[in-house]
Length: 281
Image (cartoon, rainbow, N blue to C red; front, side, top):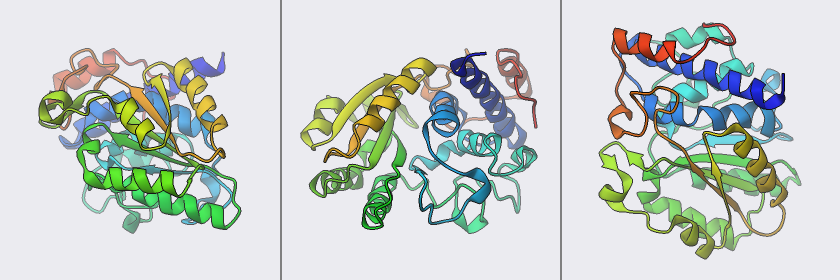
């Protein structure tokens, strides 16, 4: 089996996890999670240099990832578990009382893989800038990665951090935007249009790439190009086109599944579209 097929199979299982986790507690955010399953699978299973068995908060000598749009925690928890940070069976505790898998990730729960609290949108890029600068001061050649929602770019703090990263030549930073065109209240263009996003980031001094976030070959190829662009004086931005709810036909392309759990019947329909590949928790 090719590496791309292996990654695709893992992403399919991650999508099954997402559907089952959100259905299990009748709460959570399946739409964005499903849309980003391919990217996070590729990031943790192919792109990043990281050690799940020796997690610590500093992450010295390894790549770091910060999830800024923390409401899509189901996909992150699944990928963390499937890549070895904690037992896959713990996914069954998602959003339950005393669970380490809260609706928005928090380091207070001491869950391996989680270094910051996220979900208050707009803050992840600032944190990543600090982490990336720290690596530079330590002469640590590792890369810092972030993921953001497109609606999140309506937060002013994002653009303060964008200016800072370019001005300080933070070139060990690769940020990605999930550009699915949907946010909690409707289409992004109707809530507050982002205009020409590529031109904006380029004007802020970033090296910008674009990719199809629901195509594994595109992800692996473009992220390799993004890594090759680090260390050259500019931060790197990847604009990732996805479809919210990708993989489940009745969830695709609508903001209605931003934060809604499927019914029993809908859960069964979704799982019938997603082949079990690694075994359910």
